[in-house]
Length: 372
Image (cartoon, rainbow, N blue to C red):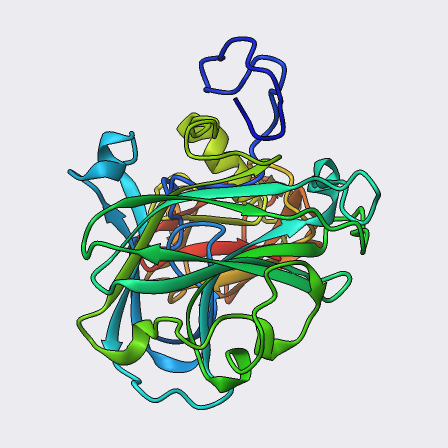
C-alpha cells in the first residue's frame, strides 16, 4: 500500500490503482524515442542530442558520447525496457573548475503540473523512480529545480554494484511555497547530477525545498563521472509519481504505445527527411508555395524551422515530371500547427502544378524545434 494511504482497488493494465489513473508526467521515460540520432559524439556543451525530451546541461566538464543504448539483458531489460539513455566519457576532466557542471534533466511545462498543487497548503509529496547503471559506484544526486520561483531540492542515491542495473525509488517532500505558472513555458525540471565543481558542492545540501543557493545542490562526496574515459552512466524506466511510495508500493511503469510516446515527443521536436514523399509545394512563380504543411501534432509553440543539407543534392524538388534547380528553401508563417515551405529557383514553375520534396540522402532534413 502506498505510504500516502491511497487504497489499491485493483490494478489496471498499466499497473496503476484503478482509482488513481493519471497521465504520466515524464515523457519518453523508457527512452524509446530518439528522433535526432541514436548516438552523438564529441559533445562539450548543453543540448538535446539523443533520446527525446532528455536535455544535457554541460559546462566544460569533459567530452561525451550521448546515445540511445539498446538493452538485451540485465534487470532493467527483464523489467520490460529495451532502450536506455547513455553517457560515455571520451575526454576526462578529473579536476573540475568551480563553475563546471554536468547533469541530465527533463523540463516540464507549468500547465502540466497542476496535480502537484505546488505552492498551496495541499502541496503533494513526490516520488521519482528509475533504473540506473554505471561502471562507477558511489554517491549520486537527483533533484528538482523550480524555474518560476527559483527554489530547489535534491536527494542522493547510491550505485552499489558496477555495471549492474539497479532500481531506485526516491521520495521528495511537498513544497507549500511557490506556485508555478499555468502556461506552456518551463516551470520545473527534474535533474540527475553527474559531476560539478566547488560552486555546487560547498554548502549544505538542500534535502528540503529552499530558495536556490548553488552551493547546496549536491554533497561534497558526489561522484565526478568525468574523471576517467572509462566512465559511463545510463538510465531508463524513469517515472514521476504524485504521492509518497516505497519500492513495494510504487506503481508499475506506465508503458505507452510507440505512437502515443512519439506524439508527445513531437510536441517539442519534429523532423522529416530521407523519404521520397515529402512536403507538397505547388509553385505559382519563382518563389511561392501557397499550400501549408501541417505538423503531425500541435507543437508547444511556433517552432524554429531549419533546412539541413545541400539544396539540389541532399534535398531536391520534383515538379511537373522533373527535378527543378533550386537556389534556396526556407519556411514562412510558422505556427504551432503548420508552416509554409517556400523555394527560390532560377527557373519558373508551372502554375498550379504539384510537386514534392525528395530527401535524396539521410543528411537532407527539415527540423522543427519547440523545446523548452
